[in-house]
View 1 (tube, rainbow, N blue to C red):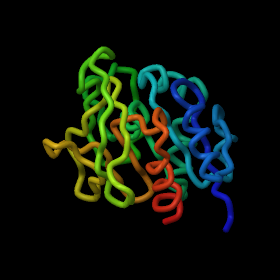
View 2: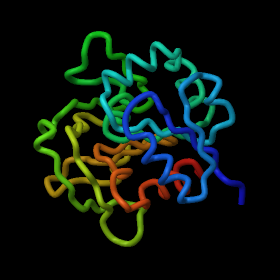
View 3: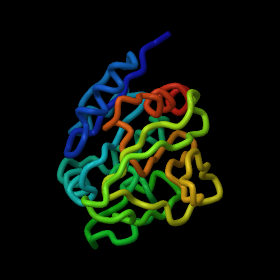
View 4: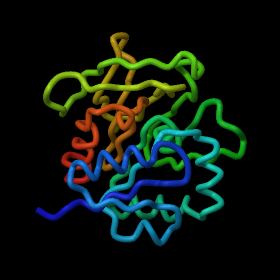
Length: 196
Protein backbone atom coordinates (compact mmCIF):
# COMPACT_ATOMS: atom_id res chain seq x y z
CA UNK A 1 0.00 0.00 0.00
CA UNK A 2 1.29 3.47 -0.91
CA UNK A 3 2.18 5.65 2.05
CA UNK A 4 -0.06 8.71 2.31
CA UNK A 5 1.63 12.09 1.87
CA UNK A 6 0.33 14.41 4.59
CA UNK A 7 1.20 18.06 4.92
CA UNK A 8 1.10 19.80 8.29
CA UNK A 9 0.49 23.55 8.11
CA UNK A 10 3.39 24.86 10.18
CA UNK A 11 2.71 28.57 10.55
CA UNK A 12 1.63 28.55 14.21
CA UNK A 13 0.11 26.16 16.72
CA UNK A 14 0.44 22.43 17.51
CA UNK A 15 1.91 21.31 14.18
CA UNK A 16 4.73 19.22 15.71
CA UNK A 17 2.22 17.11 17.62
CA UNK A 18 0.21 16.42 14.45
CA UNK A 19 3.36 15.47 12.56
CA UNK A 20 4.31 13.02 15.32
CA UNK A 21 0.84 11.42 15.17
CA UNK A 22 0.88 10.97 11.39
CA UNK A 23 4.45 9.67 11.30
CA UNK A 24 3.52 7.16 14.01
CA UNK A 25 0.75 5.93 11.68
CA UNK A 26 3.21 5.44 8.82
CA UNK A 27 2.44 8.53 6.74
CA UNK A 28 5.07 10.57 4.95
CA UNK A 29 4.81 14.09 6.36
CA UNK A 30 5.90 17.50 5.16
CA UNK A 31 5.73 20.83 6.98
CA UNK A 32 3.87 23.36 4.83
CA UNK A 33 4.64 27.08 4.97
CA UNK A 34 4.55 28.08 1.28
CA UNK A 35 2.24 27.28 -1.68
CA UNK A 36 4.73 25.02 -3.52
CA UNK A 37 4.83 22.73 -0.47
CA UNK A 38 1.19 21.75 -1.13
CA UNK A 39 2.20 19.99 -4.36
CA UNK A 40 1.63 16.23 -4.36
CA UNK A 41 -0.06 16.02 -0.96
CA UNK A 42 -2.90 13.57 -0.29
CA UNK A 43 -3.99 15.50 2.78
CA UNK A 44 -3.25 18.56 4.90
CA UNK A 45 -3.85 19.22 8.58
CA UNK A 46 -4.53 22.74 9.86
CA UNK A 47 -3.58 22.60 13.55
CA UNK A 48 -5.01 24.14 16.63
CA UNK A 49 -3.43 27.39 17.78
CA UNK A 50 -4.62 30.98 17.40
CA UNK A 51 -6.99 31.30 14.44
CA UNK A 52 -6.39 35.04 13.93
CA UNK A 53 -2.60 34.52 13.86
CA UNK A 54 -2.87 31.58 11.46
CA UNK A 55 -5.20 33.60 9.19
CA UNK A 56 -2.73 36.49 9.04
CA UNK A 57 0.13 34.12 8.24
CA UNK A 58 -1.93 32.33 5.56
CA UNK A 59 -2.35 35.70 3.86
CA UNK A 60 1.31 36.72 4.28
CA UNK A 61 2.49 33.38 2.87
CA UNK A 62 0.02 33.52 -0.05
CA UNK A 63 -1.63 30.26 0.94
CA UNK A 64 -5.37 31.06 0.78
CA UNK A 65 -6.03 30.43 -2.91
CA UNK A 66 -3.48 27.62 -3.40
CA UNK A 67 -4.93 25.77 -0.39
CA UNK A 68 -8.50 26.17 -1.69
CA UNK A 69 -7.40 25.03 -5.15
CA UNK A 70 -5.57 21.97 -3.79
CA UNK A 71 -8.65 20.97 -1.80
CA UNK A 72 -10.90 21.48 -4.83
CA UNK A 73 -8.52 19.25 -6.81
CA UNK A 74 -8.92 16.42 -4.27
CA UNK A 75 -6.56 17.06 -1.35
CA UNK A 76 -8.23 16.10 1.94
CA UNK A 77 -8.10 18.67 4.78
CA UNK A 78 -8.29 18.08 8.55
CA UNK A 79 -8.75 21.01 10.94
CA UNK A 80 -8.49 20.85 14.72
CA UNK A 81 -9.81 23.70 16.92
CA UNK A 82 -8.35 26.82 15.24
CA UNK A 83 -8.00 24.79 12.04
CA UNK A 84 -11.71 23.95 12.19
CA UNK A 85 -12.49 27.66 12.62
CA UNK A 86 -10.56 28.56 9.48
CA UNK A 87 -12.19 25.78 7.43
CA UNK A 88 -15.71 27.18 8.02
CA UNK A 89 -17.65 29.29 5.51
CA UNK A 90 -18.52 31.81 8.25
CA UNK A 91 -16.76 32.62 11.55
CA UNK A 92 -18.81 34.22 14.35
CA UNK A 93 -16.71 36.62 16.39
CA UNK A 94 -14.00 36.90 13.74
CA UNK A 95 -11.90 40.01 13.36
CA UNK A 96 -12.80 41.98 10.21
CA UNK A 97 -9.54 40.90 8.54
CA UNK A 98 -9.94 37.19 9.45
CA UNK A 99 -10.91 35.53 6.18
CA UNK A 100 -12.33 31.98 6.36
CA UNK A 101 -11.06 29.35 3.93
CA UNK A 102 -14.70 28.27 3.35
CA UNK A 103 -13.80 24.61 2.77
CA UNK A 104 -16.92 23.40 4.62
CA UNK A 105 -20.56 24.49 4.72
CA UNK A 106 -20.35 25.30 8.42
CA UNK A 107 -20.79 28.42 10.56
CA UNK A 108 -18.54 28.30 13.62
CA UNK A 109 -18.34 30.34 16.82
CA UNK A 110 -14.88 31.12 18.22
CA UNK A 111 -13.99 30.49 21.90
CA UNK A 112 -17.47 29.11 22.60
CA UNK A 113 -16.33 26.90 25.47
CA UNK A 114 -14.76 29.72 27.47
CA UNK A 115 -11.27 31.00 28.14
CA UNK A 116 -7.98 29.11 28.54
CA UNK A 117 -8.73 28.55 32.23
CA UNK A 118 -11.89 26.65 31.22
CA UNK A 119 -9.91 23.99 29.29
CA UNK A 120 -10.80 20.35 29.92
CA UNK A 121 -10.24 16.80 28.68
CA UNK A 122 -13.00 14.27 28.10
CA UNK A 123 -13.86 11.12 26.14
CA UNK A 124 -15.96 11.52 23.00
CA UNK A 125 -17.77 8.76 21.06
CA UNK A 126 -16.72 9.10 17.40
CA UNK A 127 -18.55 7.43 14.49
CA UNK A 128 -16.23 5.37 12.33
CA UNK A 129 -13.63 4.93 15.07
CA UNK A 130 -13.48 1.53 16.77
CA UNK A 131 -12.43 0.90 20.35
CA UNK A 132 -14.70 3.21 22.31
CA UNK A 133 -14.66 6.99 22.84
CA UNK A 134 -11.60 9.01 21.77
CA UNK A 135 -9.61 11.27 24.06
CA UNK A 136 -10.31 14.95 23.38
CA UNK A 137 -8.69 18.08 24.81
CA UNK A 138 -10.76 21.29 24.66
CA UNK A 139 -8.81 24.57 24.82
CA UNK A 140 -10.83 27.73 24.00
CA UNK A 141 -12.75 25.42 21.70
CA UNK A 142 -15.12 26.58 18.97
CA UNK A 143 -18.75 25.55 18.54
CA UNK A 144 -20.28 24.41 15.25
CA UNK A 145 -23.25 26.81 15.18
CA UNK A 146 -24.84 25.86 11.87
CA UNK A 147 -24.26 22.94 9.51
CA UNK A 148 -25.15 22.77 5.84
CA UNK A 149 -27.18 19.80 4.51
CA UNK A 150 -24.10 17.93 3.26
CA UNK A 151 -22.26 18.02 6.60
CA UNK A 152 -22.21 14.81 8.65
CA UNK A 153 -21.83 14.86 12.46
CA UNK A 154 -19.28 12.24 13.55
CA UNK A 155 -19.07 13.12 17.25
CA UNK A 156 -21.34 15.00 19.62
CA UNK A 157 -21.35 15.93 23.28
CA UNK A 158 -23.86 14.66 25.84
CA UNK A 159 -26.04 17.67 24.96
CA UNK A 160 -26.04 16.74 21.27
CA UNK A 161 -23.64 19.58 20.41
CA UNK A 162 -21.56 18.62 17.30
CA UNK A 163 -17.87 18.17 18.14
CA UNK A 164 -16.58 16.60 14.90
CA UNK A 165 -18.01 17.08 11.42
CA UNK A 166 -17.18 15.87 7.94
CA UNK A 167 -18.09 17.08 4.48
CA UNK A 168 -16.59 14.95 1.72
CA UNK A 169 -12.81 15.26 1.92
CA UNK A 170 -12.92 17.77 4.80
CA UNK A 171 -12.86 16.83 8.50
CA UNK A 172 -13.10 19.37 11.34
CA UNK A 173 -13.05 18.79 15.09
CA UNK A 174 -13.59 21.30 17.90
CA UNK A 175 -10.99 19.63 20.10
CA UNK A 176 -7.28 18.70 20.05
CA UNK A 177 -6.76 14.96 19.42
CA UNK A 178 -3.06 15.66 18.77
CA UNK A 179 -2.50 16.61 22.44
CA UNK A 180 -3.33 13.09 23.64
CA UNK A 181 -1.74 9.65 23.14
CA UNK A 182 -4.83 8.50 21.18
CA UNK A 183 -4.11 8.47 17.42
CA UNK A 184 -7.45 7.08 16.25
CA UNK A 185 -8.88 10.37 14.88
CA UNK A 186 -5.71 10.80 12.82
CA UNK A 187 -6.04 7.18 11.64
CA UNK A 188 -9.66 7.88 10.67
CA UNK A 189 -8.52 10.86 8.61
CA UNK A 190 -5.87 8.78 6.82
CA UNK A 191 -8.09 5.78 6.14
CA UNK A 192 -11.57 7.22 5.64
CA UNK A 193 -11.08 10.82 4.46
CA UNK A 194 -7.76 10.72 2.58
CA UNK A 195 -8.44 7.15 1.48
CA UNK A 196 -11.99 7.87 0.28
